[in-house]
Image 1 (cartoon, rainbow, N blue to C red):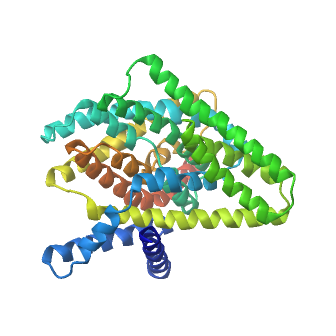
Image 2 (cartoon, rainbow, N blue to C red):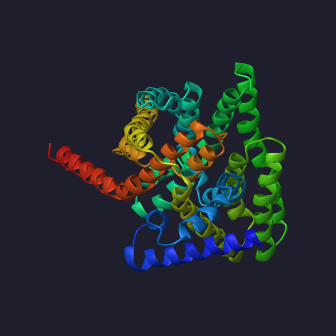
Length: 423
C-alpha cells in the first residue's frame, strides 16, 4: 500500500507540474517539470527552517523511502532506453557509427580520467579529502551523457539531423560503457574487485558485447513473434514483455541491460516497424511507447527536483561544484574534439559540431542514481552533492540555452556561406 501511495503522489505531482509548465512557463517539458519540482523543494526546506510547517520533514521521509538508484537503473531505464531507441533511424545511425562508437567508449574513459584527476586536485584543495579512486568514480558517473535528458531536450531545439543522431546515439550507448567503468572502479575502491587488465577486459566483454548480442537475440525473437501475428494489442504486449522480461533476465545473466534495450529497440523500431507490423499496429505501438516515455520522463524529473530535500550541503560542496562545472565541460570538449579532428580528414561534419556536442552533452538522472549507489560515508556525501549540482546546471543552464546556441551556429554558417559566395 505504501508503494502505491508513493506512486500516486509522484504521478499527481508530475501531472500538476506538467500542467503548470504547459499553461504558464512554456519551457521544454523535462526542464519545466524539474525546475518547478526544485523550486517547490527549496521552498519546503525554507519553510522547514523557520518552523512554520512540518511538511518538509514528511516530504523528506517520502523521498528517503524511494530507492532512486533501484527505481531508475532497475525500473525506468529499460522503458526509457527502449522508447528512445525505437525512433532512431538505423540507416542514419549507421552513417555516424564510428563517431558514436569512439565517443561512447574512448570518450567516456578519457573523460573519466580527466575529471577524476582534476576533481582530486580541486576537492583536496578545498580540504575535502577524497581519495583518488573515489575521484575516478566521480569521473565515471558524471562522464556519460544522459539519454533521457538529451532525447527529451533535442526534440525541442531543432539541431541538424546528423548532429541529433550523433548526440542521441552516443547518449544511448555510452551508459553501458560508463556503468562497466563505474563498477570496475567501485570494486577496486571497496576491495571487492580486481584491477588487472584481464579481469577488466572480461567484464567489459561480458557486459557490453554480451549485452549487444543478447539484445539482438531477444529483439530477433520478438521480431519473429510480431511478424507471425496481426493484432496490435498482442504486439504492444510483446514489446512490453521484451522490455520488462528482457531487462530482468539481462541482470540475472550479468550482461548490460541498457545496451540490450538499445539494440532490441533499434531492431524493433526499424526492421520490426517495416517488416512485421501493419499500419494500425505502428500507430498504436508509437502512441503507447510515446506515452510511456513522457510519463516516466515526467516522474523522473520530478524525482530529480525532489532529491534536494535529502542532500547534505555545505559551503565547500557548493564551491567544489562551481569549480568542477568548467572541468566537466572541458573534459567533454576534449573527448569530443579529438575524434572529430581526427575524422575530419575522411568525412564532413556539420558547422559548429564540437561546440554543439560539448554543450549538448547533458547529464541527468543516471549520474545521480550511480552516486546514490556509492557506499555510505563522507565520500558519498560529497560526490552526491556535487553530482546533483552539476546535473541541475546541465539540465537547466545547458538545456535552456542549447536552442540559442544552435541558432547562433546556424547564423555563423550562413554568414560563412555568403562570404564564400561573394568571394
